[in-house]
Image (cartoon, rainbow, N blue to C red; front, side, top):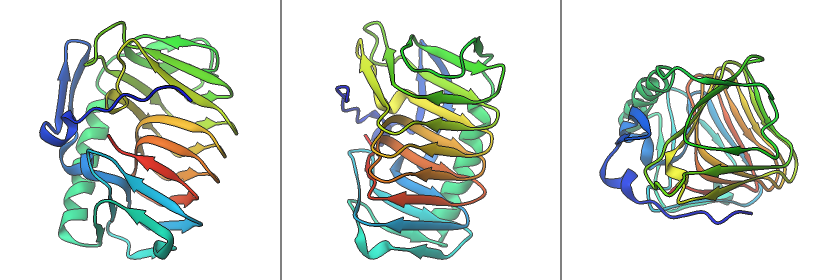
Length: 227
């Protein structure tokens, strides 16, 4: 697992701008480790924390199962006004992430690659990670990485993402046109903005947050650190 640098700017400045990236109006989504539309489902012991916030949100749905074994540093917003606002902010941020023109990568699988700041897509419309992905900010801690997946993001069991050159997890974004699946025992870095659903398979660790616009977020012995 790579060294994950702590970034607290998301607490104070919910709109992200830098010389390396576009404006992303994150709004209140920054305080949520998990935000879903229909259901939040948890199996086993899950921990949600981080300096940006450890809230769990659900709107307009009301079904949050397995909450008794979720430890979170924030609060639950289940079908309340705060969750509705966060979902509206999620829609805005999702739109902002689709504005930059991406560089099209030849390979769908990001394993073994070192990615520098910028916006990326693939011709196939999906991203995978079967090994180790390195994100190198080149010494700029404000550098932004955006991955635009027209369809899915899927990471393999035990895969990992490493931050180098001052890269910050809070400046990594995944715009997912349908659903994201984070593999068992894997390490994932960044904010996941999914149109449909997000599944974190058993024992996954996420340095960022999981935000689903239309459907569910499913957790299983998940660790989320939202810095």
